[in-house]
Amino acid sequence: MKINISSRDLSYDIVYEKGAIGHLQDYLNTDRKALILTDSGVPKAYAESAASCFKEAKIVTVPQGEQSKCIDNYLMILREMLAANFTRSDCVVAVGGGVCGDLAAFAASCYMRGVAFYHIPTTVLAMVDSSIGGKTAVDFEGVKNVVGSFYQPSAVIIDTEVLKTLEDRQVNAGLAEAIKMAATSDAGLFKYIEDCDDYMADLEEIIKRANVIKKAVVEEDPQEKGLRKVLNFGHTVGHAIESAAEGRLLHGECVAIGMMLMASEEIKPKLEKVLKKYHLPTECEFDTEELTDIMKHDKKANSAGVSTVWVNTIGSFEFKNMTWEELSKINKIRG
Image (cartoon, rainbow, N blue to C red; front, side):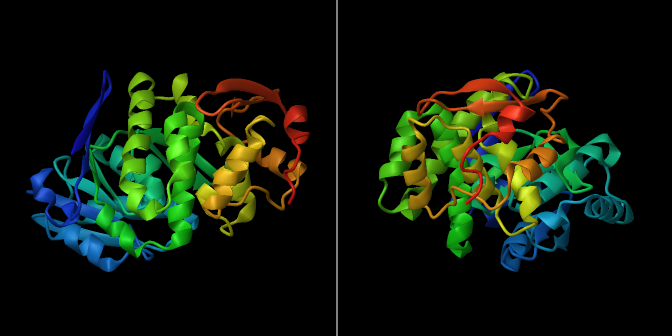
């Protein structure tokens, strides 16, 4: 099965097939060099399987975790490509989650002004969200995603077989992004996630339905000038929590807390119930002053405040400009 992402600025396929990582030649041009970027938390067999499909491949492994999404590793990838005489006809492939995808795509966007980039996501979070849409970035000076570019993948290959080795905590953190999209844009999907008894059996359906939401958003607004900001539900405060947590919380866990802070009192109980069903946190230990200072570096921030996404009823949203004073008064930010 395929979903095509297409607009004036982009066109590529999201391919869904179990076992696809072992025969990438069926979906993309493998008669060239590839730099395969993975991390230490991904089973080696996945990167090796992808590499075996190419005429020539170099596997580069970075340590697992957000700390690897940095300028030093970005430069290291460029050096590896230059040393191996990569040309504009060669490619970069991410075999991993959002960290690998962001880092590999940013390097691909800059090397020789752009080479082909493919993402083979190995986490629920990346399959649901970060592998699609062309956002690339690295963290800098403690600020998340502050240096980056928009650069679309040439294809995304979703092979849910690789999720069998994923820890439950990582699966749940990825589901937070699906819950985010459902809360803003699809009440039916929210109920599906809310009611499902065996989420591992339902994962592929959840991923596909979340991808359909993201497809509609990024096709209309590929560079986040309007509608695409809806994908930031839970992320404004969530990114600040993630920076303050310094690796103790996963991205999806931070987004879960962030969603609770941007939801109306009417839907908070429903949202909290579904988040807790998937063992996701709904409060944090950081105070508003600390988080507000971090949020002032947010790309959507200005001197007066920041643009946020607010959900009053499940399946709909509104954009709300909040002042720093308003943000500092958000309740229940401390657990």
